[in-house]
Image 1 (cartoon, helix red, strand yellow):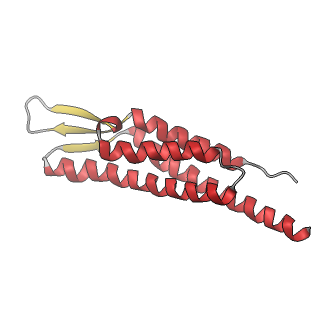
Image 2: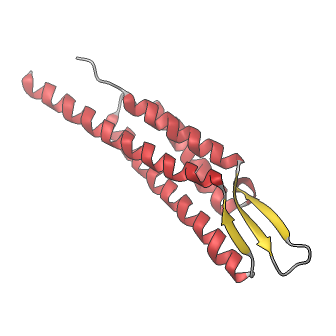
Image 3: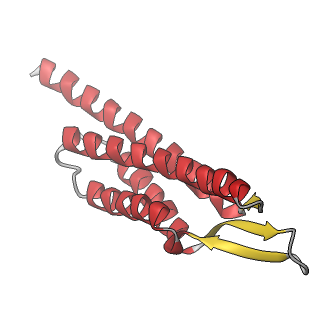
Length: 144
């Protein structure tokens, strides 16, 4: 019996997406009231409220790759990292819309913000692959 470990590839790709998101700008704010117009790029490493969940998620995903022998633990850690990724998306939206709106700044998303939903998709694909492997193992155990 051979189990396909495609979830490792999905987890690795999600980890890469989260690690890249740590170092790229996630948004841009423009102060339209200033003359000339002032623009500033927002980086994940400068916002601790965003850096911590993104870094923890990347580390959890890195550790999760090596939990392939214990699939229930791998699924639990992956679920936690999925929730942290969703929290990161919420924090990005909060920073760009609420805080920028409170300071009368014009906020814009960056093209790099697509990395967070991509990571969510890969994490969901990995959860599905883990579920299929557990189901396959249970069917083989029934045959014994």
